[in-house]
Image (cartoon, rainbow, N blue to C red; front, side, top):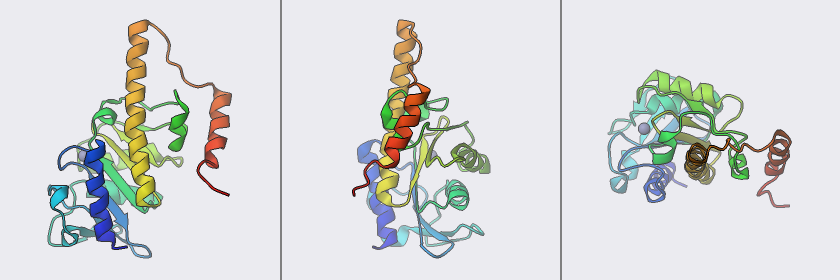
Length: 213
Ligand SMILES: [Zn+2]
């Protein structure tokens, strides 16, 4: 599989699923066995991308190779790749995750597609080292995704399919979380977080989820 084409395919899959808006968001994929990753260029509509537009970045020294400039969130991709080694990293500027202001906790079992929570990283200027460091801090403990406060999410995986599926879950769970809070405020009810023993049970269940014999 051509990794540059895979970056394009993945980037183009985001907008139709409301996982990013217009030409926002960015995708990077590791070049196995090297220190380089392929990343979407800055500010080019995904529909127009061709493989030569994809920029190669070195995660050790930050250098880039290509005819276009790398995504403005290059530092975020580099920091998360260096800290956790994910093959595929997606950042989307999406609606629901941009409105979440705290960790998302288990109100449905679906969250265990990600973990026992979706951690929250407070707002930092787009493209800054602070947003990169904030994401790394939030994802500590093995969380493959996090909310970037007032700025969407990051979702990672061992391959494109896994990262994309997690991005879908982050947006879905963000909407669920926000609507649940709104419902609780409107009806005066307390938030319904799953009980601790049920969380432990679900964590275990999901460790074997989707694994065929
Ligand atoms: Zn963004």
